[in-house]
Image (cartoon, rainbow, N blue to C red):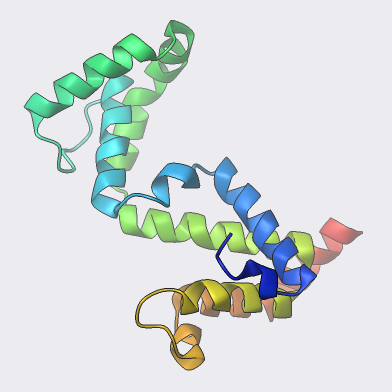
Amino acid sequence: IPAGVEALPAPAVHFLSARAIDLLGRGWALSGKFAPRDVGILLELACRFAGGNPPSLGLPPQRAEAFLAALARSVPPSVAARAAPLGEGASEELARTDVRALAAAIRRTGARVALLVTGDPGAALSALLLLETQRPGTSEPTAALEQPDLRDLALLALSDPFLDLRVAVVG
């Protein structure tokens, strides 16, 4: 939730709150805070820890061993056992994954879910506009409107599927 949120009307704050909760459930606490290269390294480590053989996404093998040893010491055996069957499949999927696109998809999904929960496209777009204008190079509202996240949410809000989904949510 951004600085300046207190200036937003309550519906925009509700949108940001719903978005934050959804993003937390999708692992945004890590993937949203790290650079895409670092997210790739984290995913690579997770696959290796689970016994997979993912492509190298930037972590030298000699450094990977130290991280994997730390994981082996700190991850409960029950969690490691549940992760083991996922290693190979996750490695194959990681080989086909664009980490930048993954981060954008998580972020946009959070906004879509929050819009479905709150049902107020104007408030949602105002909230995202606040987020976008806090980024470097987007001090002008027209520049922010060119941002893919705003465009994506606006297109959803104007679509028939949004109306159908919103009716399903509200009843």
